[in-house]
Length: 248
Length: 224
Image: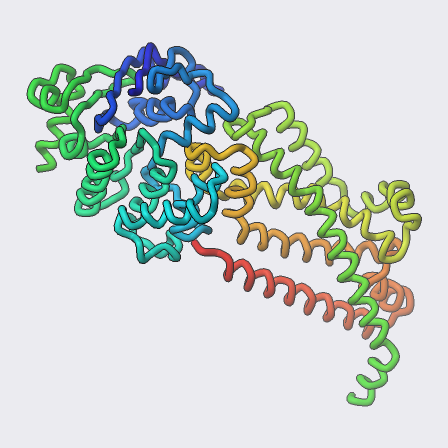
């Protein structure tokens, strides 16, 4: 379970302090596929980075499985991050490494034995359907294949949680459906709790069971996908839902 | 014409061979020294940048300032400035050995900037991914910054090497060995224009070879 309590984040720049997150309270239960939706600049990316502490919250606490991890540092922080997989909008694959070496990276930094690591990586490449491509380089793959590699990489350390930061925003609609299917499969079969950051209601509709709507650094609405879709409260939720209608 | 060439190489052939060897020795040794010191400085500068892995604004500013200062001293002046250090380290200030210290020192800030700029070319998302998977700062430097920018580092090394070939010719002016020394002694002091032209041709060939080899290696290892 992930719990965010009274979370806030302020960025300081030359132009002054800028609030990216304000009073975020959120509970993500084990087994959820939890959507966090909002427009660009709403603070979603910052929020998800507070979970694995790539961003340090200015105020508030992050609890993971009941443990306050907000002030973790050094080894404990690195170990925590290893338990949380992450995938990115631009995939962020290591371009000078083969597909297999990309998936090996998280295991390499944990100093796992080479043979075990390779076995695990191959297992995962099989899971994402890229078994035959282990010796290729990312540049030789399509966008969808690259995101599959990055999913395999994110799962290397047997994480309990998977953070997806706009994971399908750079992909076409057909590829998006297959990647979302894969994420759903991982949630169901491996029991990985998934946090999905997106600006597209269609993504939430396709795979999430719960959703939080963000607007201007705050969470304005949260609930099951069914309840939020059938009875939206916030104005921004109406707008986001309207966009889905226009899509269809 | 043939007779002239036979005569010319008979007189100066061994001189050019020795000069080329000396130049390559000076430049290779000083490039190695420059990287030995330049790479750690570049790494430290990169990780202490604002928003980087270990932000230290003051240290970062000081490093940048030192690098810029080093780069703004003209080489011919730097050579003279470091004479006491050269003598202390090598016991001499002339010849191939005497030139390695000033060449190496001159190239350290150059290399530091070059390596740092190779690191900066990397997609920041790649570094973030490394952090997200629990890599330590040291692992991010070695496994991501260095490994992922290797093709760019190779190209930078060629630029450094070629720049130092140019500097080494200048070092000839204060008594270093090598092709620059030959050009000055024969071409300038004794008005042997053909010797001067020959050294220039050799330098051009050297530069072309270095550039071609580095292009080849960089292309071969770059998987983007």
